[in-house]
Amino acid sequence: MAPARETALAALAVALAGCVWGALWIPLRHLETTGLVGPWGNIGAGAAAVLVMLPLAIWRMRRTRPSWSLLLMGLFGGAAFNLYNNGVMISDVVHVMLLFYLTPIWSTLLARFFLGQPITGSRIVTIVLGFAGLAIVLGAGSWLPIPQRLGDWLALCSGVLWALAAVLLRKREEIPPYDSSFSFFAVGLVTAVLVPLLVMPAALLDHVPGMADITRSLPWIVLLGPLLWVPAQLLLMWGTKRLDPGRVGILLMGEALVGAATAALLTDEPFGWREILGGLLILSAGLIDTLLSGTMAKATQPASA
Image 1: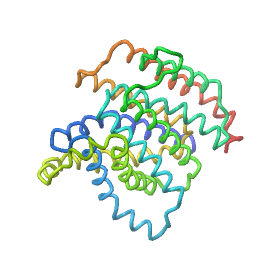
Image 2 (image 1 turned 120 degrees about the vertical axis):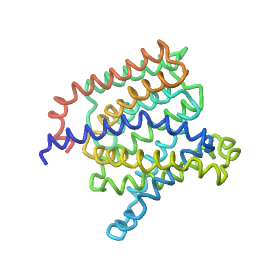
Image 3 (image 1 turned 30 degrees about the vertical axis):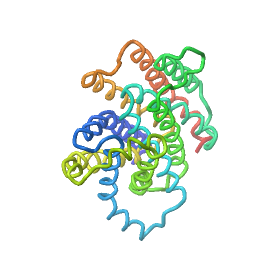
């Protein structure tokens, strides 16, 4: 496949995965009405995803031995995913998504440190606009925007961890998408339990589901885990390893558009001038980088290859 066509397909795969992620909060929250309250819906869907992928993963592991890089990739990516999902459950959807979309900032800094990629002028604009949008969304009263709610902190940490996973994926391009995706869900399933146990234990321990709850929620678990999470993650892993980490974070901003639209239509959560203006700044940062980084990449590719 021609490099330009492969890059275009990779960008499409990441953007499509981001759009799917933008609507995943809907079945995740709906699971609460079936009896899987709080983190349990996330745990149930994650377990279903692991079970579906397990047979092929076992067959593949007989051919290729797992590595520490694969384990770290699953740890960073799975923890990011579960922090994000728990953030969506306890905080405003739009706030969580916008805080996650500071990922291009962390990706750019980490790519510079680990991969030696230069920080271009367009990326500097991205960073400035991203932090400006963050300050507006959070309504910071000082020069440093600090989240005030647990869900917002979970979203911010999620973006940092996902940036680490994206950089590691780029550094270890030889790891197949299926292996990295299975590690994402399998190691992530451990973090799906540990994260709420550490930061909000009451939400986990006070709502242990019974067999009737699990049976009632099973159709939604299958929809969320095997039918939505797994295909979206495979697309994301395939595309991520073929793109610059900063651009991956930018392309995933399509999730913000889908998430903001669905949240505005389906919830009564705050969606005023702060969310609109802050979101526009953050998304504008991504747009500027996308428009300018094509020519920048041609100049920097030989040095970073």
